[in-house]
Amino acid sequence: MGNDIEKMKNALLVGPLGFANRNQNITEKLGHVKRLLTAERGFVTEVAKAIQWSPTELQQYIAEHPDLKDFLLSCRRDLTEILLDLAENNLLKALENGQHWATQFVLTHKGAERGYLPPDKIKEKIIEQMAQEVANVVAEEINDPAAVNRVLAKIASKAS
Image 1 (tube, one colour):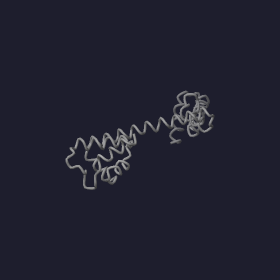
Image 2 (cartoon, helix red, strand yellow):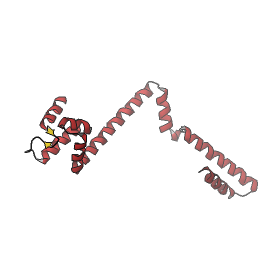
Image 3 (cartoon, rainbow, N blue to C red):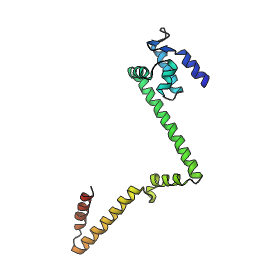
Image 4 (cartoon, rainbow, N blue to C red):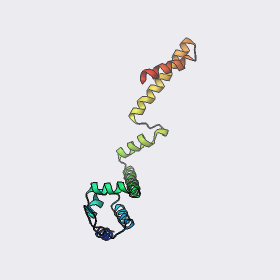
């Protein structure tokens, strides 16, 4: 792959005023830039170095060509997916190795339906439960079931 990248770079040598090969049509130029963006995983600075432009010049060129702009976004989405896959794989390895931080992360971020909550959510849940209990006691004491909703509304308004 490294040799292919070098061939692409050499085919697209340019200076700050434009592509060196003035006879190359726009479709070929865009194709070269797309191949370099793919090879460099959307890192504009690396592509700019390869074609001897500044990153700003390449960003301007990309902005002038909507299909290149869309292609760059696609490269970045692909890179994000790769990064997420790597991160999830590392998290899985850490879980398999019994890393406490990984276990805690998964339980607090993915285990809510099983009762595992992050600390800020635990506080909210306790307050909700306490408010419900207070409202029930008030309703029993004054013998007015509708009082539960009024008490809960008052507690909710003071909490926010």
